[in-house]
Length: 104
Length: 123
Image (cartoon, rainbow over all chains, first blue to last red):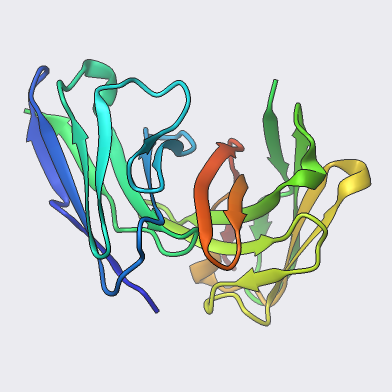
């Protein structure tokens, strides 16, 4: 089974900061990676699919990159609404353990 | 609008059974794969099962294989998860999601999610 490892587990940042979250796969998954945002008590929301494609309606400050085994989610300028937990997912199967973005 | 609404969660004793439902609206349900994903209290997301648009293909996480059964009724725009032999570790919020996968090689994310239904397995 392919394992997904996110880092860091928790990230403290301020409004306006550039934030990068990394997701590593235990073996190559080509570009079949999605990123989700989840706020407490709410369902996850799809941000990025196929590693770098922005889902419709998602602000352009979110971007994704990578292929093979290493991927990143970048928020170019952190906004108050972005404080949440972020998950990567490979090909509709395994999720990463999550990265909580909290206020510094 | 595009919407998924889960129901059927509740408190059940270990070894018991429960059937979850997910009602879809606002899109052509029969065009899409569908998945169930769960989240244990304070934990991350775990994919549970998927079913193809015509019910031809299903797949399950190892943790539920042999105990859970996914099904759908396209005429009723509904997705189901029959959960048998429930264990304490099955306690979670269960989400249904529209699944944009095209097996074996293509995956475009889960773009519509329900609000979740809570399953608690406890004596």
